Length: 240
Image 1 (cartoon, one colour):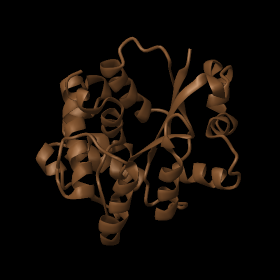
Image 2 (tube, rainbow, N blue to C red):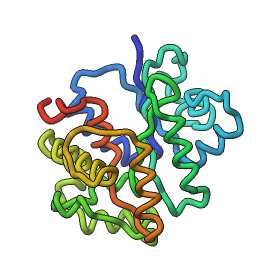
Image 3 (cartoon, rainbow, N blue to C red):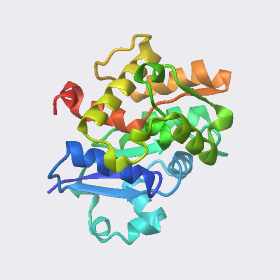
Image 4 (spheres, rainbow, N blue to C red):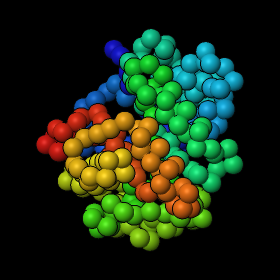
């Protein structure tokens, strides 16, 4: 049986949110493997840029002790994995960050059946809870000075609705609302039209962030997980 590998930057919060959406939208699936890279996207970029032939699957197993100790993953061969999805943070305050590196990674990881498909949270995973009023969210930004782990975690908790703070309590209607809000916002970033129609290529989203927000010391808040759901299921995500 082919497996789908989901790779997260962190060990805790990302998996909590993913397990919540998995429970709602992938009930009964047994072919998912969840693993944490335990480092950021720019560290991954650095490793890959040193060896163009390096397989991301092997790199994840090599660099992450937790992955090596995960028996299910350790026994897998690359040809047993049908799809790879990666979830990382933009983290514009990271020491290794550059806009070009981000674009390069999105160009490389653009197909789940090849190197993998990358979904980026702007500025980081807590973007998922940085939402209260859905219309106001369409223009919500974070200043770069707040795009540091401790700062943004506090900010997103303060200004986001309490209903999104506990991943275990995000049910199907709430997830569908998050999908609609984030898809509208992503389409608005790219085309200026806040359309709920599923999108999207990840590259233009990053390009608009870099062109329209970073020069003003801001990032448009956007969560990777709802965008993944829209990409995976298309329009039917609203009816599932």
